[in-house]
Length: 348
Ligand code: PMV
Image 1 (tube, rainbow, N blue to C red):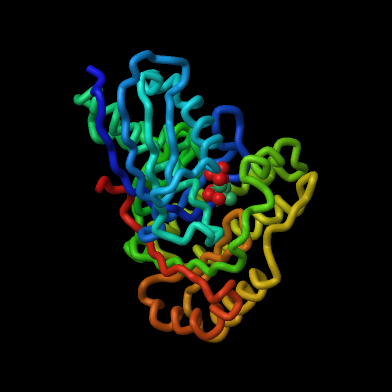
Image 2: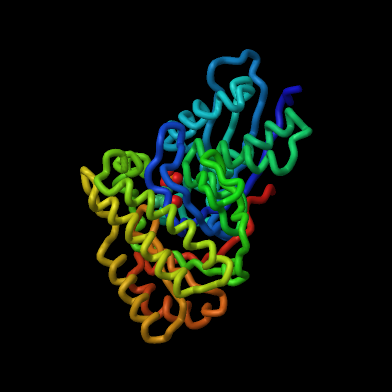
């Protein structure tokens, strides 16, 4: 039976891809598999309040609030999301919703909140589905949440579970699917369970190119086929690395993925460039530090100028001293976020 009213509350983490998703087909189907670290403290907390409508109409009614204030800027994105999930959750058209959301990181930080935001909302909607169909198994719940999250933002499919998540059908990854993310199903060396990610905020401005526009530029991109093959090869190459903890191999693969993502942007038509001078200066400092100290530190990038500085827990004291002395000066207003690999979403 449909509950008359109620609410669901979920906190979902952000994630940082090691093998990047860049390029998609209709229905938010990725053109290549990807794998990411789930983050811990960078997260979105969402409460979804729902109330039955007197009359069902084609689409649900909803209002969105960020930090307690109406956030009309998110309306269009959420409207499109509800439209996409309707075939998979037809009961939503019977409800009026209020989405109350807040991020644990500053929203002007240039940190993409779409992965954590869409994942938190998807979890709330899966929660409503479970209230309607109480027999829903935990595994089915998680899968449905990731499936719905994917329809909001592709990378959100990887923001439900921890600590390493794979998304995209791939022969050597058992249980993998284009439709939802799964916890990495193969052996994982403990060094990767406690990896650190210091996010260096180089440019807190709005993205000049939306990720949807970026994904679309992979259609007809001259290097697309090679890139998609490379991502698949990287997923395979990571298996022994994840199992054995070979950090040197990990570093060269992860940095190559980051630079390839940006190389795709620089060679698309139209081309664009998201790195800033400070992005390159930080990368050069990281390389210098690694060469001089031998610490297994590396960087990755998402679709923006900010740098994710990755290192194992064992390197934390030295790596963070280096951040403070040498990297923070390149950050906008010195801003950076200290995060680490996390365990996935939680209800609150
Ligand atoms: O989830 P989207 O559509 O915003 O795409 C994000 C893509 C990257 O962040 C650049 C890479 C990734 O795999 O997360």
